[in-house]
Image (cartoon, rainbow, N blue to C red):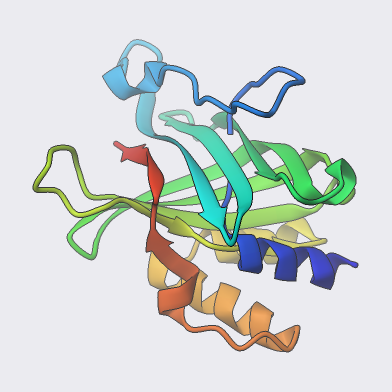
Amino acid sequence: MRTLFAIVLLAFVGLAILGCSESTDQLVAPVDKASTVSLEKGVIHSATGSAQVFDQGKSFTFAFTAREYSDGNYDGQYQIYVHSQPPEFGKIHGKVMSLKVYDWNGGKAAVIGTIETNSGFEGFYDAFVVMDYGEGNNSQTDMYSTTIFWSETLEEAQDVWNLPPDQVIDAIVAQQLSFGNVVTPEQVLIPIQMGNVQVR
């Protein structure tokens, strides 16, 4: 069933959140307070974003916020919602356990590690990549993973969380191949259709 879920995510694209109400019809990312990078609070990196994707008449939303602190701690939340799926499989909510930020591929990339706290797979660990190309009309479109890397063990997840973005994408591709899904890195990290990512 987890393989089916991964296929669903690959098919409908997406990822991640921040505190939302029970109504998920309009998932909105909160104001990124970490974007001001408060040195008093020790925030050294932050990543936020939200998007809605439409694929063949079906809708998929995600949102997330993640912060890394100077003391080595992390916080944040994420949510994925595939509207066409039953809530136990189509809706994931969880907390951020890791955030790594990289200057990569002409922009700022974030590798975000999480644990699912409210889904049919509570306790599973995930990893995904987002890409921020800046603001303005001349900026390249921000990007996000079309599916996640997931693991039942923290040790395996941490190995992936500590990889640079291209290697995380390779890990996602390899995992999908193990499920029988032939995908390429270009199909994993794609431009956001509606939404925005900010990585600092």
